[in-house]
Image 1 (tube, helix red, strand yellow):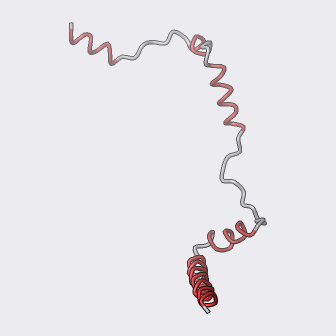
Image 2: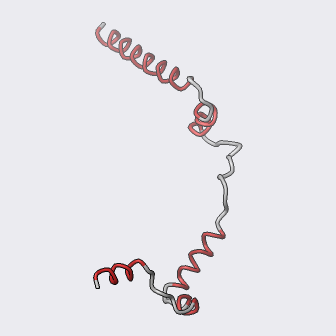
Image 3: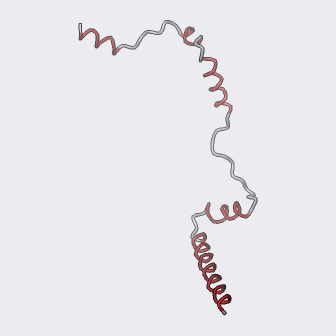
Length: 94
């Protein structure tokens, strides 16, 4: 008896016909979703050849190429801002 029950759990239930499966209430919704995803464009998004704005231009110029320039620019900006702070403090003190 126990052996027989374990065999029946290995065998999947038999589907009577494919028409009954297609008549399921969610079948229309699933087919609409499949049609929607089929209509979407495939492949990578096209590159924007002309970036607009300063940040997009900087990103296209330095970040998309593996460049060290952004690190140098950041270092220069930090050093410059520290220099301006020390200059401002000396002007205020005097």
